[in-house]
Image (cartoon, one colour):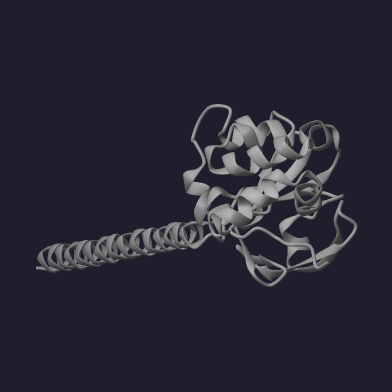
Length: 223
């Protein structure tokens, strides 16, 4: 009789122990599952945050300081001498001649005899009117200017500043030009104006000796 009671007690103890062990295993599995899910969510959150930052420009904010910007940059050839990489290898007048959007400006620079002057200058900024900027001028006015070398030289040298300007410097400044009068810049981010009217449509374009800011209006010297 005593033996039977002992056997039953032992059997009961084993059943309880097994149940406890099974419960512990179940809880452990649930905890692991929860931990894995939590880790996945954390990683997923980090990935999502990084993607959002990249999409919003946060990850490339520093790079923006060195990259061309503006709506008209899309018209610059992707490859070849007229591309951003190609222009960076040539002096500014030569680089401009390879960019189809600046063909009228190049014609004006040649007519004024300023090709060598611009190509040999060091560390300058050229506010370069694109073809659309020259198209705003009445044809009679443009023809008159192109035929008057002194007037043309005065206008073109007014577009050249004797230092390389960064996007940060375009935010608010007044800079003397090669024409000896000053122009002013204002703006922030990727939106800048020159003399309050001309918009920078493709900025921070690098050439071998100059920074180029392509603008949508021809600048006229104050006097």
